Length: 202
Length: 226
Image (cartoon, rainbow over all chains, first blue to last red; front, side, top):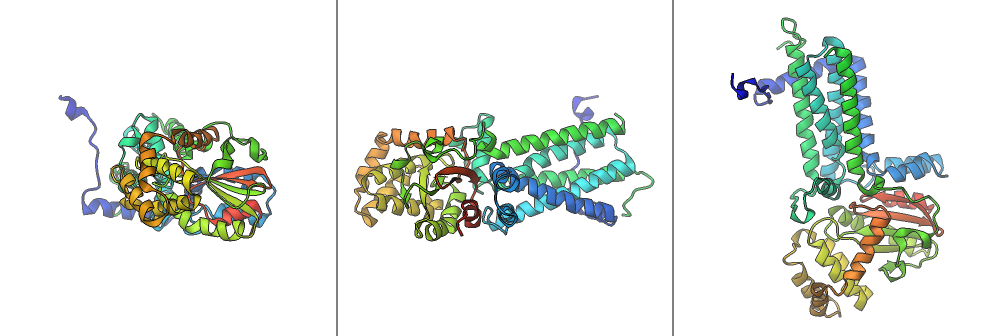
Protein backbone atom coordinates (compact mmCIF):
# COMPACT_ATOMS: atom_id res chain seq x y z
CA UNK A 1 0.00 0.00 0.00
CA UNK A 2 1.40 3.41 -0.95
CA UNK A 3 1.79 6.20 1.55
CA UNK A 4 -0.72 8.32 -0.33
CA UNK A 5 -3.36 5.62 -0.18
CA UNK A 6 -2.97 5.39 3.59
CA UNK A 7 -3.49 9.12 4.18
CA UNK A 8 -7.00 10.07 5.25
CA UNK A 9 -9.04 11.73 2.53
CA UNK A 10 -10.06 15.28 3.35
CA UNK A 11 -13.55 15.89 2.08
CA UNK A 12 -14.47 19.37 0.99
CA UNK A 13 -17.92 20.81 0.30
CA UNK A 14 -17.58 21.03 -3.45
CA UNK A 15 -20.99 19.79 -4.55
CA UNK A 16 -24.41 21.33 -4.20
CA UNK A 17 -25.47 18.28 -2.23
CA UNK A 18 -22.74 19.02 0.31
CA UNK A 19 -24.18 22.45 1.02
CA UNK A 20 -27.66 20.97 1.13
CA UNK A 21 -26.43 18.42 3.65
CA UNK A 22 -24.99 21.20 5.82
CA UNK A 23 -28.19 23.22 5.65
CA UNK A 24 -30.42 20.30 6.49
CA UNK A 25 -28.21 19.14 9.33
CA UNK A 26 -28.09 22.63 10.76
CA UNK A 27 -31.87 22.87 10.47
CA UNK A 28 -32.25 19.50 12.18
CA UNK A 29 -30.07 20.54 15.11
CA UNK A 30 -31.61 23.99 15.47
CA UNK A 31 -35.13 22.54 15.35
CA UNK A 32 -34.48 21.21 18.83
CA UNK A 33 -35.17 24.18 21.15
CA UNK A 34 -32.36 23.35 23.57
CA UNK A 35 -29.79 23.29 20.78
CA UNK A 36 -31.20 26.48 19.23
CA UNK A 37 -30.78 28.23 22.58
CA UNK A 38 -27.29 26.76 22.88
CA UNK A 39 -26.37 28.11 19.43
CA UNK A 40 -27.59 31.58 20.32
CA UNK A 41 -25.75 31.57 23.66
CA UNK A 42 -22.58 30.26 22.04
CA UNK A 43 -22.81 32.90 19.30
CA UNK A 44 -23.19 35.72 21.80
CA UNK A 45 -20.40 34.30 23.90
CA UNK A 46 -18.13 34.05 20.87
CA UNK A 47 -18.95 37.60 19.80
CA UNK A 48 -18.28 38.87 23.30
CA UNK A 49 -15.00 36.97 23.44
CA UNK A 50 -13.93 38.46 20.13
CA UNK A 51 -14.67 42.07 21.04
CA UNK A 52 -13.51 41.89 24.65
CA UNK A 53 -10.26 40.18 23.67
CA UNK A 54 -9.29 43.40 21.90
CA UNK A 55 -9.77 45.50 25.01
CA UNK A 56 -9.18 43.41 28.10
CA UNK A 57 -7.57 46.25 30.12
CA UNK A 58 -10.47 48.56 29.29
CA UNK A 59 -13.05 46.00 30.37
CA UNK A 60 -11.18 45.04 33.54
CA UNK A 61 -10.49 48.65 34.52
CA UNK A 62 -13.90 50.14 33.81
CA UNK A 63 -16.54 47.43 33.33
CA UNK A 64 -15.44 44.89 35.92
CA UNK A 65 -13.58 47.27 38.23
CA UNK A 66 -13.46 51.02 38.67
CA UNK A 67 -16.11 53.34 39.97
CA UNK A 68 -18.33 54.01 36.98
CA UNK A 69 -22.10 53.87 37.30
CA UNK A 70 -23.92 50.85 35.93
CA UNK A 71 -24.99 52.89 32.92
CA UNK A 72 -21.38 53.89 32.31
CA UNK A 73 -20.21 50.29 32.49
CA UNK A 74 -22.91 49.22 30.05
CA UNK A 75 -21.94 52.04 27.69
CA UNK A 76 -18.28 51.05 27.73
CA UNK A 77 -19.10 47.39 27.06
CA UNK A 78 -21.74 47.84 24.39
CA UNK A 79 -19.63 50.38 22.48
CA UNK A 80 -17.14 47.60 21.80
CA UNK A 81 -19.63 45.63 19.68
CA UNK A 82 -20.00 46.01 15.90
CA UNK A 83 -22.61 48.52 14.71
CA UNK A 84 -22.96 49.94 18.22
CA UNK A 85 -19.54 51.52 18.58
CA UNK A 86 -17.05 52.50 15.91
CA UNK A 87 -14.44 49.81 16.45
CA UNK A 88 -15.38 47.94 13.29
CA UNK A 89 -16.21 49.01 9.78
CA UNK A 90 -19.34 47.70 8.11
CA UNK A 91 -17.50 44.88 6.35
CA UNK A 92 -15.58 43.85 9.44
CA UNK A 93 -18.73 44.06 11.55
CA UNK A 94 -20.78 41.88 9.21
CA UNK A 95 -18.00 39.31 8.95
CA UNK A 96 -17.58 39.27 12.71
CA UNK A 97 -21.30 38.70 13.25
CA UNK A 98 -21.29 35.94 10.64
CA UNK A 99 -18.26 34.25 12.20
CA UNK A 100 -19.88 34.45 15.63
CA UNK A 101 -23.17 33.01 14.32
CA UNK A 102 -21.40 30.13 12.58
CA UNK A 103 -19.31 29.48 15.67
CA UNK A 104 -22.53 29.13 17.68
CA UNK A 105 -23.96 26.78 15.08
CA UNK A 106 -20.71 24.80 15.04
CA UNK A 107 -20.71 24.40 18.82
CA UNK A 108 -24.35 23.38 18.86
CA UNK A 109 -23.84 20.81 16.09
CA UNK A 110 -20.73 19.40 17.77
CA UNK A 111 -22.47 18.91 21.10
CA UNK A 112 -25.50 17.41 19.37
CA UNK A 113 -23.19 15.01 17.56
CA UNK A 114 -21.30 14.05 20.71
CA UNK A 115 -24.45 13.53 22.75
CA UNK A 116 -26.57 11.78 20.17
CA UNK A 117 -24.07 9.67 18.25
CA UNK A 118 -20.73 9.57 19.93
CA UNK A 119 -17.78 10.11 17.63
CA UNK A 120 -15.09 8.07 16.05
CA UNK A 121 -11.44 9.06 16.43
CA UNK A 122 -11.28 10.32 12.88
CA UNK A 123 -14.48 12.32 13.10
CA UNK A 124 -13.52 13.69 16.47
CA UNK A 125 -10.07 14.66 15.32
CA UNK A 126 -11.46 16.42 12.31
CA UNK A 127 -14.03 18.22 14.38
CA UNK A 128 -11.44 19.24 16.97
CA UNK A 129 -9.20 20.49 14.19
CA UNK A 130 -12.06 22.55 12.85
CA UNK A 131 -12.75 23.97 16.28
CA UNK A 132 -9.05 24.70 16.76
CA UNK A 133 -8.64 26.62 13.53
CA UNK A 134 -12.08 28.11 13.80
CA UNK A 135 -11.38 29.50 17.23
CA UNK A 136 -7.98 30.81 16.22
CA UNK A 137 -9.29 32.41 13.07
CA UNK A 138 -12.48 33.71 14.59
CA UNK A 139 -10.66 35.07 17.58
CA UNK A 140 -8.62 37.26 15.31
CA UNK A 141 -11.46 38.35 13.08
CA UNK A 142 -11.87 41.58 14.97
CA UNK A 143 -8.27 42.54 15.17
CA UNK A 144 -7.43 44.25 11.94
CA UNK A 145 -4.12 44.40 10.24
CA UNK A 146 -2.03 45.52 13.20
CA UNK A 147 -2.62 42.37 15.20
CA UNK A 148 -2.33 40.20 12.12
CA UNK A 149 1.08 41.70 11.54
CA UNK A 150 1.93 41.13 15.17
CA UNK A 151 0.84 37.51 15.02
CA UNK A 152 2.85 36.82 11.90
CA UNK A 153 5.88 38.53 13.35
CA UNK A 154 5.72 36.02 16.19
CA UNK A 155 6.50 33.27 13.70
CA UNK A 156 9.32 35.19 12.08
CA UNK A 157 7.54 36.85 9.17
CA UNK A 158 9.03 40.28 8.60
CA UNK A 159 6.34 42.91 8.78
CA UNK A 160 8.13 44.92 6.11
CA UNK A 161 7.47 42.17 3.61
CA UNK A 162 3.75 41.95 4.21
CA UNK A 163 1.07 43.26 1.95
CA UNK A 164 -2.51 42.99 3.08
CA UNK A 165 -4.91 43.97 0.34
CA UNK A 166 -7.90 43.64 2.63
CA UNK A 167 -6.43 45.50 5.61
CA UNK A 168 -6.75 42.58 7.99
CA UNK A 169 -10.09 41.18 6.84
CA UNK A 170 -8.04 38.21 5.68
CA UNK A 171 -8.31 36.65 9.11
CA UNK A 172 -12.08 37.02 9.22
CA UNK A 173 -12.38 35.37 5.82
CA UNK A 174 -10.03 32.60 6.90
CA UNK A 175 -12.16 32.05 9.98
CA UNK A 176 -15.26 31.78 7.81
CA UNK A 177 -13.64 29.14 5.62
CA UNK A 178 -12.38 27.07 8.53
CA UNK A 179 -15.64 27.17 10.47
CA UNK A 180 -17.60 26.31 7.34
CA UNK A 181 -15.32 23.31 6.83
CA UNK A 182 -15.81 22.30 10.43
CA UNK A 183 -19.58 22.47 10.02
CA UNK A 184 -19.36 20.41 6.86
CA UNK A 185 -17.18 17.78 8.49
CA UNK A 186 -19.55 17.61 11.42
CA UNK A 187 -22.55 17.24 9.13
CA UNK A 188 -20.72 14.62 7.11
CA UNK A 189 -19.69 12.83 10.29
CA UNK A 190 -23.23 12.84 11.59
CA UNK A 191 -24.35 11.13 8.41
CA UNK A 192 -21.47 8.66 8.62
CA UNK A 193 -22.10 7.95 12.27
CA UNK A 194 -25.67 7.00 11.57
CA UNK A 195 -25.35 4.68 8.59
CA UNK A 196 -28.69 3.07 8.10
CA UNK A 197 -30.19 5.68 10.35
CA UNK A 198 -28.93 8.99 9.06
CA UNK A 199 -30.45 11.89 11.00
CA UNK A 200 -30.74 13.88 7.81
CA UNK A 201 -33.39 12.82 5.35
CA UNK A 202 -31.72 13.48 2.00
CA UNK B 1 -10.47 6.72 22.16
CA UNK B 2 -13.76 6.54 23.98
CA UNK B 3 -16.29 9.31 24.03
CA UNK B 4 -15.40 10.61 27.49
CA UNK B 5 -11.69 10.72 26.65
CA UNK B 6 -12.40 12.50 23.42
CA UNK B 7 -14.59 15.08 25.05
CA UNK B 8 -11.88 15.80 27.59
CA UNK B 9 -9.24 16.17 24.90
CA UNK B 10 -11.53 18.21 22.69
CA UNK B 11 -12.29 20.49 25.61
CA UNK B 12 -8.62 20.93 26.34
CA UNK B 13 -7.93 21.57 22.69
CA UNK B 14 -10.70 24.11 22.48
CA UNK B 15 -9.51 25.84 25.63
CA UNK B 16 -5.97 25.95 24.34
CA UNK B 17 -7.14 27.30 21.03
CA UNK B 18 -9.17 29.95 22.77
CA UNK B 19 -6.23 31.00 24.87
CA UNK B 20 -3.94 31.10 21.88
CA UNK B 21 -6.43 33.09 19.87
CA UNK B 22 -7.14 35.44 22.70
CA UNK B 23 -3.49 35.92 23.57
CA UNK B 24 -2.65 36.56 19.96
CA UNK B 25 -5.40 39.06 19.48
CA UNK B 26 -4.58 40.95 22.59
CA UNK B 27 -1.44 42.17 20.94
CA UNK B 28 0.25 44.36 23.47
CA UNK B 29 -2.64 44.26 25.88
CA UNK B 30 -1.21 41.31 27.77
CA UNK B 31 2.31 41.76 26.57
CA UNK B 32 3.58 42.42 30.05
CA UNK B 33 2.49 43.56 33.48
CA UNK B 34 -0.18 46.16 33.13
CA UNK B 35 0.51 49.58 34.50
CA UNK B 36 -1.20 50.04 37.85
CA UNK B 37 -4.35 52.08 37.62
CA UNK B 38 -3.97 55.58 39.01
CA UNK B 39 -0.33 56.08 38.04
CA UNK B 40 0.44 59.81 37.95
CA UNK B 41 0.63 61.20 34.42
CA UNK B 42 4.28 62.17 34.67
CA UNK B 43 5.30 58.73 35.94
CA UNK B 44 3.59 56.69 33.25
CA UNK B 45 6.01 55.18 30.70
CA UNK B 46 3.79 56.28 27.80
CA UNK B 47 4.28 59.95 28.71
CA UNK B 48 8.09 60.09 28.39
CA UNK B 49 8.98 63.31 26.59
CA UNK B 50 5.31 64.20 26.31
CA UNK B 51 5.96 67.95 26.30
CA UNK B 52 7.57 67.62 22.87
CA UNK B 53 4.65 65.77 21.29
CA UNK B 54 2.02 67.22 18.95
CA UNK B 55 -0.88 68.33 21.12
CA UNK B 56 -4.21 70.08 21.10
CA UNK B 57 -5.29 71.49 24.46
CA UNK B 58 -3.34 71.90 27.65
CA UNK B 59 -1.77 69.21 29.79
CA UNK B 60 -2.51 69.00 33.47
CA UNK B 61 -5.99 67.53 33.56
CA UNK B 62 -7.64 64.98 31.34
CA UNK B 63 -5.46 63.66 28.52
CA UNK B 64 -6.19 61.40 25.57
CA UNK B 65 -2.81 60.06 24.48
CA UNK B 66 -3.10 58.26 21.14
CA UNK B 67 -0.49 56.05 19.49
CA UNK B 68 -1.25 56.23 15.79
CA UNK B 69 0.31 55.08 12.54
CA UNK B 70 -0.52 57.13 9.44
CA UNK B 71 -0.66 53.88 7.44
CA UNK B 72 -3.16 52.21 9.81
CA UNK B 73 -6.73 51.95 8.47
CA UNK B 74 -8.33 51.87 11.92
CA UNK B 75 -6.35 54.99 12.87
CA UNK B 76 -7.94 56.66 9.88
CA UNK B 77 -11.38 55.73 11.19
CA UNK B 78 -10.41 56.95 14.66
CA UNK B 79 -9.22 60.26 13.25
CA UNK B 80 -12.39 60.73 11.23
CA UNK B 81 -15.03 59.53 13.67
CA UNK B 82 -13.67 60.01 17.16
CA UNK B 83 -11.06 62.78 17.16
CA UNK B 84 -13.51 65.51 16.04
CA UNK B 85 -15.64 64.71 19.09
CA UNK B 86 -12.55 64.76 21.31
CA UNK B 87 -11.68 68.20 19.97
CA UNK B 88 -15.21 69.49 20.37
CA UNK B 89 -16.08 68.06 23.76
CA UNK B 90 -12.72 67.85 25.50
CA UNK B 91 -10.25 70.27 23.93
CA UNK B 92 -12.55 73.14 22.94
CA UNK B 93 -14.23 73.14 26.35
CA UNK B 94 -10.89 73.27 28.15
CA UNK B 95 -11.50 69.93 29.82
CA UNK B 96 -8.50 68.12 28.44
CA UNK B 97 -5.85 67.57 25.81
CA UNK B 98 -5.41 65.32 22.83
CA UNK B 99 -1.81 64.20 22.27
CA UNK B 100 -0.49 62.13 19.36
CA UNK B 101 2.52 59.87 19.38
CA UNK B 102 3.30 58.73 15.84
CA UNK B 103 3.99 55.02 15.96
CA UNK B 104 5.02 53.25 12.74
CA UNK B 105 4.17 49.57 13.21
CA UNK B 106 1.65 48.70 10.50
CA UNK B 107 2.50 49.18 6.83
CA UNK B 108 6.07 49.90 5.68
CA UNK B 109 5.29 53.36 4.27
CA UNK B 110 4.31 54.48 7.73
CA UNK B 111 7.94 54.65 8.81
CA UNK B 112 9.19 57.27 6.33
CA UNK B 113 5.93 59.10 6.85
CA UNK B 114 6.56 59.29 10.57
CA UNK B 115 10.08 60.62 10.00
CA UNK B 116 8.60 63.30 7.77
CA UNK B 117 5.98 64.10 10.39
CA UNK B 118 8.66 64.59 13.04
CA UNK B 119 10.67 66.83 10.72
CA UNK B 120 7.55 68.82 9.89
CA UNK B 121 6.47 69.23 13.51
CA UNK B 122 9.91 70.57 14.40
CA UNK B 123 9.33 73.34 11.88
CA UNK B 124 5.63 74.12 12.22
CA UNK B 125 2.96 72.41 14.36
CA UNK B 126 0.10 73.53 12.10
CA UNK B 127 1.84 71.96 9.11
CA UNK B 128 2.20 68.77 11.13
CA UNK B 129 -1.56 68.50 11.64
CA UNK B 130 -2.17 69.25 7.97
CA UNK B 131 0.27 66.55 6.87
CA UNK B 132 -1.08 64.10 9.43
CA UNK B 133 -4.60 64.60 8.06
CA UNK B 134 -3.31 64.37 4.48
CA UNK B 135 -1.83 60.94 5.13
CA UNK B 136 -5.19 59.66 6.37
CA UNK B 137 -7.15 61.40 3.61
CA UNK B 138 -5.04 59.81 0.88
CA UNK B 139 -4.02 56.69 2.80
CA UNK B 140 -4.73 54.12 0.11
CA UNK B 141 -2.55 55.88 -2.45
CA UNK B 142 0.66 55.91 -0.42
CA UNK B 143 3.42 53.38 -0.83
CA UNK B 144 6.98 53.23 0.45
CA UNK B 145 8.28 54.36 -2.91
CA UNK B 146 6.12 57.46 -3.26
CA UNK B 147 5.41 58.67 0.25
CA UNK B 148 8.30 61.11 0.58
CA UNK B 149 7.90 62.58 -2.89
CA UNK B 150 4.22 63.14 -2.26
CA UNK B 151 4.99 64.54 1.18
CA UNK B 152 7.31 67.16 -0.33
CA UNK B 153 4.70 67.99 -2.93
CA UNK B 154 2.00 68.44 -0.29
CA UNK B 155 4.11 70.52 2.07
CA UNK B 156 5.41 72.76 -0.70
CA UNK B 157 1.94 73.29 -2.11
CA UNK B 158 -0.25 73.48 0.98
CA UNK B 159 1.94 74.78 3.81
CA UNK B 160 4.73 77.26 4.49
CA UNK B 161 7.16 74.46 5.32
CA UNK B 162 9.97 73.57 2.92
CA UNK B 163 8.92 70.09 1.85
CA UNK B 164 12.23 69.28 0.21
CA UNK B 165 14.10 70.05 3.42
CA UNK B 166 11.68 67.85 5.38
CA UNK B 167 12.23 64.98 3.00
CA UNK B 168 15.99 65.45 3.16
CA UNK B 169 15.82 65.20 6.95
CA UNK B 170 13.56 62.16 6.77
CA UNK B 171 15.94 60.42 4.40
CA UNK B 172 19.06 61.28 6.40
CA UNK B 173 17.66 59.96 9.64
CA UNK B 174 17.85 63.35 11.31
CA UNK B 175 14.82 62.53 13.42
CA UNK B 176 15.68 58.95 14.28
CA UNK B 177 15.86 59.84 17.97
CA UNK B 178 12.42 61.46 17.96
CA UNK B 179 10.87 58.47 16.20
CA UNK B 180 12.62 56.09 18.58
CA UNK B 181 11.32 58.04 21.58
CA UNK B 182 7.75 57.32 20.51
CA UNK B 183 8.50 53.68 19.78
CA UNK B 184 10.19 53.27 23.17
CA UNK B 185 7.29 54.96 24.94
CA UNK B 186 4.84 52.60 23.27
CA UNK B 187 6.86 49.49 23.93
CA UNK B 188 7.49 50.49 27.55
CA UNK B 189 3.77 51.05 28.00
CA UNK B 190 2.93 47.64 26.45
CA UNK B 191 1.19 49.18 23.47
CA UNK B 192 2.78 46.46 21.36
CA UNK B 193 1.88 46.61 17.68
CA UNK B 194 -1.75 47.59 18.00
CA UNK B 195 -2.86 50.93 16.61
CA UNK B 196 -4.64 53.02 17.41
CA UNK B 197 -4.08 52.54 21.11
CA UNK B 198 -5.42 55.29 23.31
CA UNK B 199 -4.30 55.84 26.89
CA UNK B 200 -6.66 57.84 29.04
CA UNK B 201 -5.66 60.05 31.97
CA UNK B 202 -8.25 61.63 34.21
CA UNK B 203 -7.25 64.58 36.36
CA UNK B 204 -3.59 63.70 35.94
CA UNK B 205 -3.85 59.98 36.65
CA UNK B 206 -3.92 56.95 34.40
CA UNK B 207 -7.37 55.40 33.99
CA UNK B 208 -7.13 52.76 31.29
CA UNK B 209 -6.28 52.07 27.67
CA UNK B 210 -8.42 51.29 24.64
CA UNK B 211 -7.34 49.62 21.40
CA UNK B 212 -8.94 50.10 18.02
CA UNK B 213 -11.03 52.91 16.67
CA UNK B 214 -13.12 53.18 19.81
CA UNK B 215 -15.93 55.71 19.88
CA UNK B 216 -15.97 58.99 21.75
CA UNK B 217 -18.65 57.54 24.03
CA UNK B 218 -16.03 55.15 25.41
CA UNK B 219 -13.52 57.96 25.96
CA UNK B 220 -16.01 60.47 27.31
CA UNK B 221 -17.54 57.93 29.69
CA UNK B 222 -14.13 56.80 30.92
CA UNK B 223 -13.06 60.38 31.60
CA UNK B 224 -16.41 61.51 32.99
CA UNK B 225 -16.76 64.11 30.24
CA UNK B 226 -19.98 64.18 28.24
